[in-house]
Image (cartoon, rainbow over all chains, first blue to last red; front, side, top):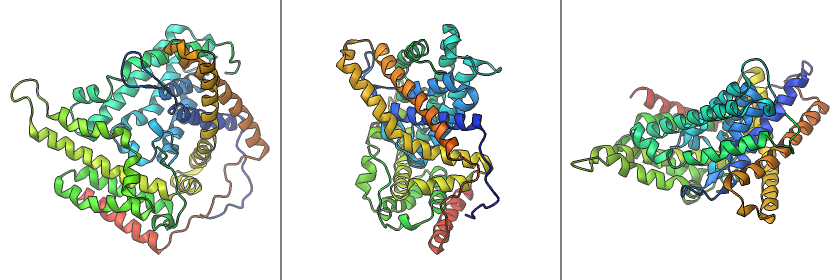
Length: 193
Length: 236
């Protein structure tokens, strides 16, 4: 690669902040993939990964939330151990659960879009609970649609069977994450947004 | 589950990251198009050989993906089930079993890339692959994700220990996720703010100097293999 010597083109202040936040939220989502809790309603443990997707949409908005999750997918693809269970590499993206990963950027963008609308970012504390729930339910539906279609394509099974194998067991836990995310946006400990 | 770069001097370690990405893409295309017994039989030696070329064993590479093994095994069985006579059909089960096997081969090849490619090489390849500012921002972002992952993992683990030490284990699942999430998010937001200040202080620019990537004879050979695999997929 040739070295550029034409002078330095600095990145604008606002963009620097957004890139920094997008990268840190992508890393946070990766770190959340390692935290799991026993699930009261299903034998599959609950990981916090999807919570990272919700928070990226809620705190960064549709554009940078989506960018953040794209970074998450890209960093995992080139080898950061940030996918579920510490997975990484293009193999995970093309594997049976790759559909979930492909859906994350779109889901974060959709969550951000429903929560913030199209006229600039709003403090998540100011957004009403029904709207927050709608935003995250929309994100969840997209993630599971992506996951189910991905599993069906990669494993050559029908959509119904793919849903039963790869999605049904995980869905109840999403309600806990949505409730937790609402609790987070209402938390007094957080002053930033 | 520690699928990560392993320093070494395997054949793949000496390849340019771009030729390794091309190999993976060619292999994936060929595997998806030729998901038949003969097609996968031809690709199997390549996939089995890949981790060895990266200085790891096939067993190491398979161990990284043991979490999804039950799904790969269960899919063919479920695909063959029928609600009614004859209850089980062999043809769809075989079809799905081949797909599961294809996944296994792809995972081996992808693991070989991760074993043999340091982060800075991947970052340079990302910058080369994506044009202009998008590539620059993605390259920096990917490097920052690598940098911040262990830090935020530490934050979350510390927060979780703190919650558990205060009898958090007896709280509801929602409350536990919320408590760990609030702590993690708060730390992440303040880290992002400090990172932005640090980036500005160091003249974060759209056109920094990347590590040099060089394409040698080996890389052209690898690209040739990748092109052959891609052609095999396209001509099917």
